[in-house]
Length: 200
Image (cartoon, rainbow, N blue to C red):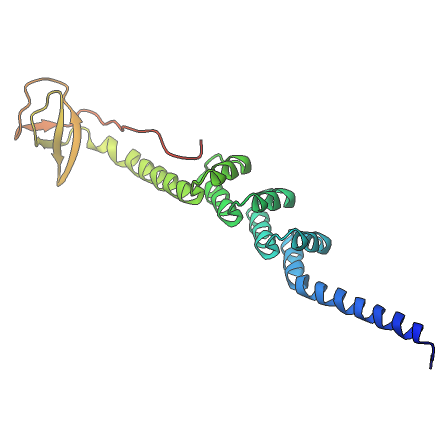
């Protein structure tokens, strides 16, 4: 048994260092294993570096896992940079996943730019998806409306409101002289639009 106090100091420092390393590794091991098993490889060294830069490691790694599982490529450095800029990384990943499912063309650069400008990118994607769903449904229904009989709810000069079934609809008259209460025939259908807010 060594009697030299210097050896005990070295042994003590070595054991303390090993204990600190084990505690650090244990802190990230579950997250690292989860990333590895999902195919979103993240090095333990990267996680430690993120922690030192005061980045929420769990948020970044889980966002990377979600992106990889959705077959979306976003480098770890980009995720971390957006987090350090004050961006909402999970929201941006959710927006990209939602856009991909909806068939919308959306890039990481565009999403993060809008996110940093205070736009709720996930809400915008959800709104666009709902609008797209409505348009798809209308595309099936609108052609069937041609030839339907409606009733004018206001004088048409040339636009006004007609009721098709129980639904009031803005319409434009093909001819003049249509008065409120007249029966009218639907001759065509059009959709009006306005500029959408956010996402370019």
